[in-house]
Length: 119
Image (cartoon, rainbow, N blue to C red; front, side, top):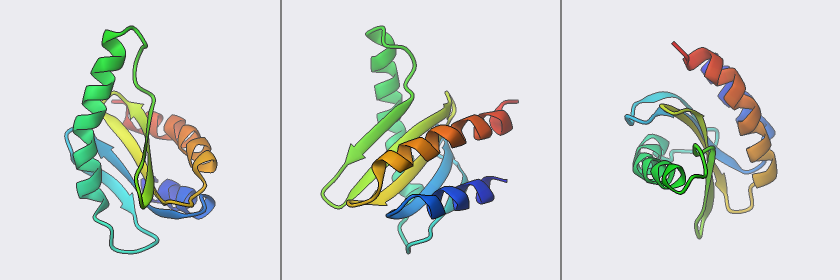
């Protein structure tokens, strides 16, 4: 189920280099790498500390729970959508990737994945 959803997202979003569903504990649930050998697991694990800090900051200033984080670097775009407080979906795009479509697809996927990850 997870693999099919990630495949659908990576096929629909132009410029996708990889996608991963990961827990805030740094454990990968599923990944998809249509464009190469990027170590997306290590990348996503590194972003867990940023997600935790951003989530805490948002809560402390009264903005509510973190929903999405977008990082733009010299070579790529990274968009992260929280699925639940314990799981997130990360999509790695090349610099010219379609960020708007990525955000839309991750928002849709969140609802499907949340039903699967709730115990």
